[in-house]
Image (tube, rainbow, N blue to C red; front, side):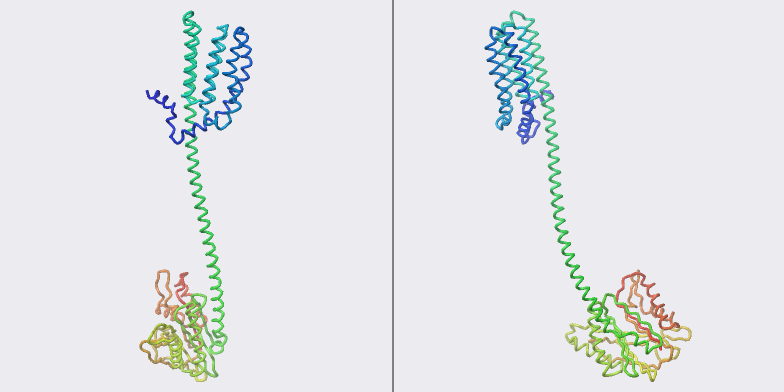
Length: 507
């Protein structure tokens, strides 16, 4: 029952979705036109010998048979060749082709009525009917149309037999001919059924393939659109990148030029070598420009020297350092007392930055200041929040942080006051020391002691003091290099946290 149901469903192409039925019929028709035209062309060729056969087999009635053949076969075949490519024919292909096959079959059966030699006519004309009905297969008639053609042809065949009265005259011959007709017509029907089923399956597969291709095309379009959007975004990012690189280059160029200006303001290191027997200077900004700075100036028999750490680093620190260097150049012409120099420097900074009650900007610096009397062999030390170290064999009334053999390492204590506005401003303390040959002074910024290692631990003053004590018996140059080696081992390859400055002076 299921198979029969499927067979009858094919009459309405029910296995196809509704939206595809019209498309199937149209494409089916277009694909069938070449087969139909070829069939019509062959029919015209084979009709020529059939006209001769009509004359031979029916000498008494060949004229009427020719008329029937011409009207039912020749003219339809010519019309098919002339109009089958036209749009109206394609759109109504099933109807026109059904009429073409059916007209031909009925015409052959009609000719059988007028045939004089029945045995010859039966087999030749029946062969013509069979061939013409077979045309429904290559021309891809719809199954229901082919069924109509086969049924009418078979009924016409029975009618011809009845009209010729062969049912009564020769029952055995009639039975054989009926059986032959039924078997051939059935074979054609079921052959057409399987071909039709194959065509529908092929079309369904084509539809699936087409839908898959359309889906791939949609996905491809989406990907192409996304690619275009990404390319557009990349273009925007590239433009922004180029713009940022341009800005960065301008800023970098400006900062590098500012570095030249800042370094031009720093004193020449050759001057310090004229005063001290040995010296070591390490100056390493965290960025291109520095908040740390050093300053010295020789005035007759006096030598004024300072190491400072301005608030911040980079560009803000560099601005502050340039400002303070300018102040120092003016102040040292007023006094050579380090404590008074620091007091003046603090006042200059407060006034210049408008510090005071508003406390909007309390930037300034930490600084160690030394003045040397080269004749008396005396130096004076004063500092704002920046301790110094003094190494000597002599005994001094100073805090001792350690010793190395005969050498004592003393702390030069700074006043806990910044060079800026402070809630409780006090005078700066001043230390006076008579120095001896090979005594050493060490000044350093907090960039050294605040440096982190890989475990995020600060170096601290204690560890730095240990470095100094360990290498205290070396000259200034060697001592500085060894301290830096210890410092680099501590820091390893970690990020520099601040500007770093260290100055070692040996008398």
